[in-house]
Image (cartoon, rainbow, N blue to C red; front, side):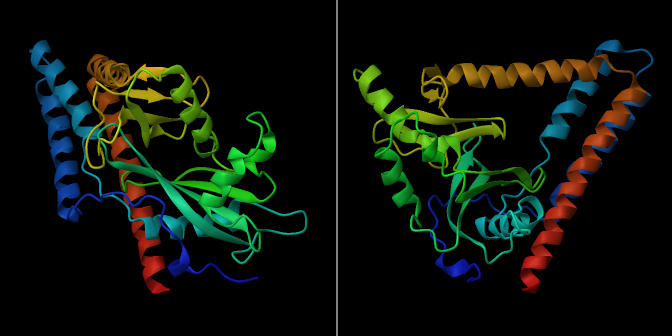
Amino acid sequence: MNKINHEQIPPIEQPELKKEFPWITIAIGVVVILVILIIVGIFSSNNSSETYNKKIEAYYSTINIPSNTISSDLAEFVAINTLPNFFTTSRNKVSLGDYESIGYLTTYDMDGLANSYIFIFIESGFKVDTLNKFEESIKGMNSDDRLRYYFEDVITIIIGAKDTEDKLWRAYRGLPEIFVEKYNLEKSLGSNYSNKDIEIGRIISSGPGRMDYEVKPFGLETMGNAVSGDWYLINPKDKELIPASEKIKSIEDFHMENANSYASMSDSDLESIVEGDLLRIENNLNSWEYSRSEMDSF
């Protein structure tokens, strides 16, 4: 079997990368949060309003620690090395020569920043060997046909695109649903919303649990921009247009609920929670740095 040749892997979507932050930026962010925690402890005795605000500030400082966007090359390196650890054949573990990458899709968060990479691997020698060929093959199948997912011949590995977040999102056999159902979603837009001058755009995700397509004004270039509340999202399961403003509000409500939970904690509980968050971020940073060093050594 031939080993994966990185130079021959065609990028399907290349995200616009954020400028790399110096590591000192991360360190400063961590120090700021620790200072906030100290202030919370000092002023917790008498001024409840000030204490509340400090605890809210502690929450938002934690979630707003700046992250670097992981390059697709590094993410691919992690995905390739995930293969032997998560999948086995009927005879033995999958080796790097058993499968080859045929490209990736990029997902974005609501702010328009790269959020994850969806890498698609095929068994070496498989005749459908590009994403475009898979798209054409899917169009010729019945919309309910499970063969569209190519469970026996394809492995999908989703890798996070931010160095403060976990590396591995998901790994499973078969094509990703968001890719397989794109053609059906486009048909749904054409038949159910023909009165709207709209088209499918980027894949939008807030995590591995749900992925939607952005539905934007036809011909509008959105790369590098946040998702507008005036646009829509559409999901492969329900195929209904959802105003993006509802998603934006749900994210705001989620963070406000979490912030209020922080504010209701005792100082010791809050300090323990934030320290745990910081430790998770530090572990993720170290894990990505280790993978980067490994890739550079090849």
